[in-house]
Image (cartoon, rainbow, N blue to C red; front, top):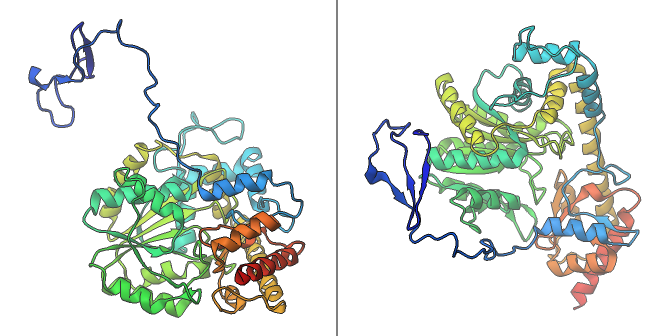
Length: 483
């Protein structure tokens, strides 16, 4: 066992002996390298103890707590406007028809999926499955090859010709975490700036990455005007212009969470120009592509613009939880656009080792489903149609809620017109409702929102409950404003 750490236990002392040589440096080790890890040791006199009794209990995530409260609420009229998961008109989690079809084809058909799979990950006759089913082997540290090819095409377009280092990840959260690890290791002097506000898990993932400094937050740049609930383009560009060259800037590709406020194309152009002029490194979180405008092409506008103007390094965390409904399958990817094939190859090697140290290899089932949809022209077209329908439903219930609030003359705590919510897009909106109103909605009407921010998720709205929700908001706001 000369290549392993060996434990030496004596009556008086427990010590750790280092291996005779260091496999990384080749340096020979000596007896001086012995590492003492204990002093007096007597296993007969050492009492048993709960070594983890000092661990503090931390409160649940606010949204997870809301989920539990909603589940236990007996009110038949209860409405969940807090959890960011797409629902259909009946309030059920949507399983895309194309996902069902791809799943059936993957498990029942030999020619289609195996042909796609073999073209990107060639196999010999000895290793090819004999029963027509895809195997359950490890996919390798990069993940499922044809899924990554399709994921790149979705973001950057057909025949993009870019040098992209890509790895499959455990959904978008792991993609963000691995990106943070990459930044810390290879761009340690560069700060990462997030929009104010941003998805709360961005800060948590950063704090867990940054030497486990719980509570550490990413520094922020101005994003919305909290008094008008609209984009503060002037404040945003001023902040970005003042950043140190080479700084890393987090952007939401579309469907900004939690505000629903996205720049229009002209505004994205202005932001892209600042990124290029200041040599900033854009880090894009792409969680809702296709669900905002109904077009995967239109929702990728900012990313394609950055590529068009020649921004040399772009990092993208991609998730298929929302736009394919693959929440529990945990399907995602991390992409790094590099200036050369050599750089992309080196970055890929580092990404593979980073994933190796966290979860080793990603799951295959959901990635194969997504990869099959993205690789098959017929399924891809059908999926795009389903996305358009989902996007239209979100726009419809958004418009219905705004129309109800306007027709009732519901006052807004900020003094703005409720029609501002119609200018937002995607699954969310910052409503501007204070925490007291959100608690009132929950306790008195069983309408669940995120109290800390007043974020409303439109996925839980439908034609059957929108009037009830509007009336609940009207009552809660008027009650609050009287106080």
